[in-house]
Length: 84
Image (cartoon, rainbow, N blue to C red):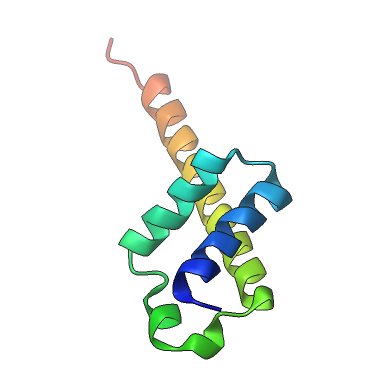
């Protein structure tokens, strides 16, 4: 599949697997693309498979979830350490 079709597939899988709306799924893919996560996929067409799209969707969602949890923990720590 083309590089663009691959990115579309990853976004579609994000909406199907995690019940994300289209805008959120596209944002995850665009952010990953900006961070050059998909650069190898562009250079190596053999990486653009349906199986790989699913594993990339899972990896992107898991990374976002982990970032969100880390940010929440940091905010809780900051709120707990208010100046007297």
